[in-house]
Length: 186
Image (cartoon, rainbow, N blue to C red):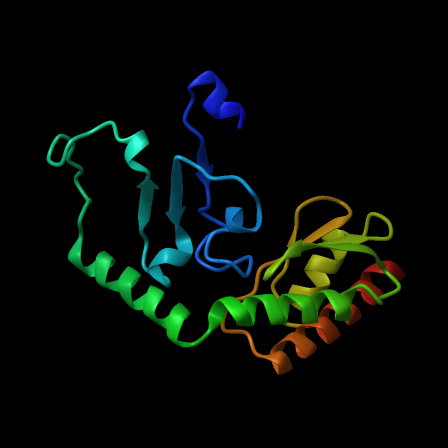
């Protein structure tokens, strides 16, 4: 790959995409890319703030004990990460992310106000027919009790929890559909 040809390290940021969000443990697993290092946070702690970096030996810059941090190695945070990883494994949350993501896509792509649905697993982008995304986000939140993010005039971002159920996906699609109708009406 290009990084290897020039002797550079390839570091991938999986802070939002990692820990099962896309239906694989790391998003890069769905590609032929093999990074030298990966950054992680957010989902790793299951709600407890944490950050981590995983690196191959070829990317090692320090020997054990060379580098210290004020907050590094916190036992409570490490325990939260271990518990999170166990739950993801034991409850089949990677498979759930893939299945619920596909359910979201099939439910959203048939809506009149939707031009395109893209993403992987439970990281989903919805392209709207016209600049209604911000109004749809407000309606979803204020009227229909659904949190989504408008990342532009025509794009909504949906990132539900890995534990979302089929019934909750159906409910979210129904609420977002109503919010899109509201937004299109002005």
